[in-house]
Length: 123
Image (cartoon, rainbow, N blue to C red):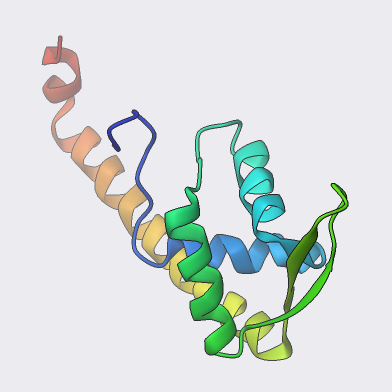
């Protein structure tokens, strides 16, 4: 948990979520952060200090391309778009995430089945 009580993201998770958000179409940084917050029911709040380095990193790796346009607020904003290379990376990251999530589910399920008193004894 962060100091403000929101969950901290696992390493690489932000990159994967940015790529996923951009599957729906191009967007600017603020729009990407807003969409992550909306979809997660305000649980995941991506800070600028994390988001913009991630966007630059993804662009440098060729997973995103960017162009400057007018935003819906009539301001100049850098819009990011998923590239073909980015789509392939998203597929790899999604597969890894599913494997990790399945493994954690197995451990948590096994731990619960083998130690039912643990959950009953927690106050």
